[in-house]
Length: 174
Image (cartoon, rainbow, N blue to C red):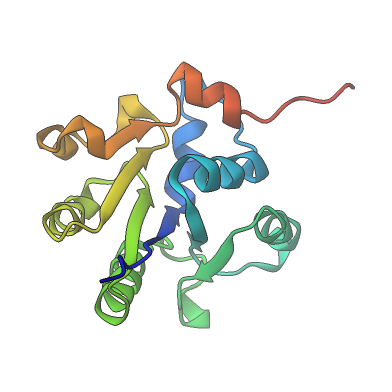
């Protein structure tokens, strides 16, 4: 019997990623192109979804940068009247997206980029199902303490020196 080939899909909580790497001490800028390559080379990530709150015209350039870096952007669905009045929390959107794919395709494994503890039950479930690769914390110091109960092989921090040097945005001259 032929072994089924596995595919890894990454889910990035965009707000958590950007805010996490920019937290003091040790604030840094992530190069999303380098990050996407890292996900592919280190974890075999075939598709990477980058979840954001609502779409705003003034961020068009940023959206292009994210797409050009190899991520598929998924925006939170908001009513027009609510834009700017509430946080663009994407946690439930990510969970639903993962659960749909989990149900539809049994050859996919999952990787999550977020330090948010709201994902812990999902992470535990995916580990139990044998479908979880890793949760990458943008900032290990601020990752939810709920993850302490999960074995270390299932998480890493992007601010670890060996990873950070691969992902940090390189400053070009003046």
